[in-house]
Length: 512
Image 1 (cartoon, rainbow, N blue to C red):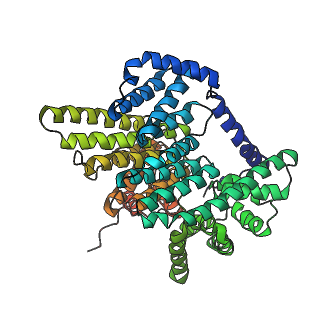
Image 2: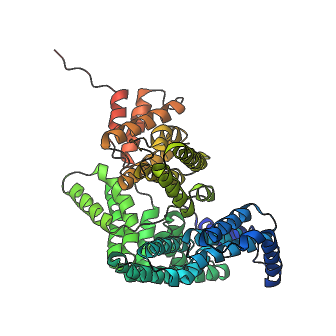
Image 3: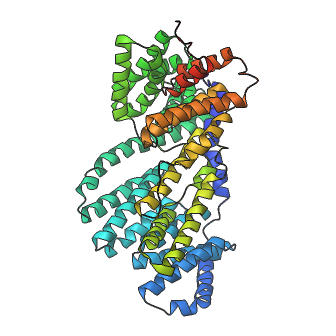
């Protein structure tokens, strides 16, 4: 069993590099132009689009806003680009057009040193008086939910909390009691994370001055573990931090035990710690789940029943966390505006007839193929989280097409079925192969993408592909059987492992 145990100084250096990396990302963006520069640019835009500005109907205004937004995406001069986006956003807010206002706000956050979620929130707030229909309020709910998710991902908790207030307002207006009733609980949860984030930032500053500050190590390590789910870096800090219970659990974890009794002690330690820390219970139990999943195949009888019961209990409190994906994958994933456009094109293709139907279908096919091509690019180059984030997006696209009656999934999850074997075969070690198979099992458990039989076949083929790609290492039956045993030891539950073992070592026919 491989475990990445980071040296303390390396973990600290990686922790401190995070803000610097974000700063470099900000440096790639342009600063907001001053008011005088914007005024000049706006005057030029009014001159160029003079005829369009004279058309005052809502549809004409909407077309103008969409045109300005598209123009901004390709404009190189930053002041003009910013002003085009701002004007498109203003038109969207005036019309109560969520797609236009949110789309322009998103691009402002992408290209300029502004918070995209904050820009969206301000637009949402200004549009509130215009929302007088059930459809408009439902659109407000969806926009607010997206802002909350994006703000949490960006760790902009003030924006996320304000967006939750907006969500409650729109949900109440839409008489959606189910959503409105969940807001206060979500706010309480976010307040806890916001407080921990502030302590994390304070801890980082303290560690710059005193790298041995125990309380700062605990504050930084705690946040990395429970909120970023980065246990490798976090445990290296909490193992020397000020909290004795965290220190004990962390040190036990970092010994990377391989014996069942010792592994159970680590798992139970995290479970007990989570039980005593209600604010972080589900998040701490994620680590207990990691260890219980490893030991489950090694257990039987009463011990197995205990582990299964605890895994079930953990599953009910497991937090929903955003995948830790690369910047390349984040850029590849469809935006909410693109998914809305896909829905609109699907609806148009479904409702059109004759020549118009063919034209609408051609446009839809071209658009969805563009989205899928973007997901396909560099699909095999990232981590497991990147691969499955792209898989999930691909399935969402196909579900939109299927729901609109212009496409069908037909149990054909192309990335999983056609590309996972290749992804598994590219694993650089049996440890990495195990990580990818475990991620596949977790993904399928969440998404219900495949039935058990299909899942087993995929695992079987993935192991075969890896063995073929590394045939100099797995040339003998003994080596291939050891590979199968290693997969079982790592906690892979699919029968595909047993099927691979049976191929390597067929059961002899009965005598007589």
